[in-house]
Length: 103
Image 1 (cartoon, rainbow, N blue to C red):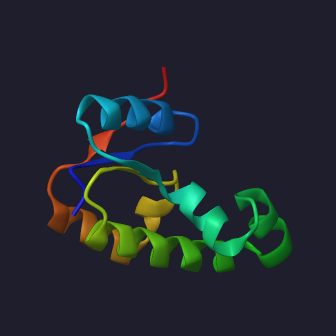
Image 2: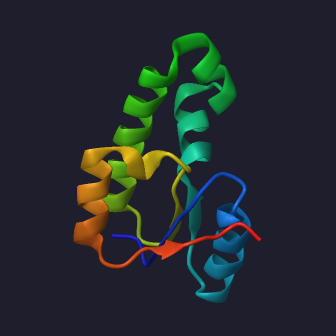
């Protein structure tokens, strides 16, 4: 279970805040969009264009649920991840996420 979960809209600063928070807490940082790109070998925008949003959202669901179960650092979720019912349920079980707000 992550120590801290950052959620919020795209461009809210989740990755920047997450990296700094990870350093401050002496723990690792992960961004689920970056993990999706690493796993798929494609950029998020390419996945949307080439395979469609439904494919991306399923991949996102799998990655987020895996990381919520296994990762123990600071985790930033993609902006739309919380729209998935399985992710929402897992977040409710994990404690209180921190919301990143756009500046």
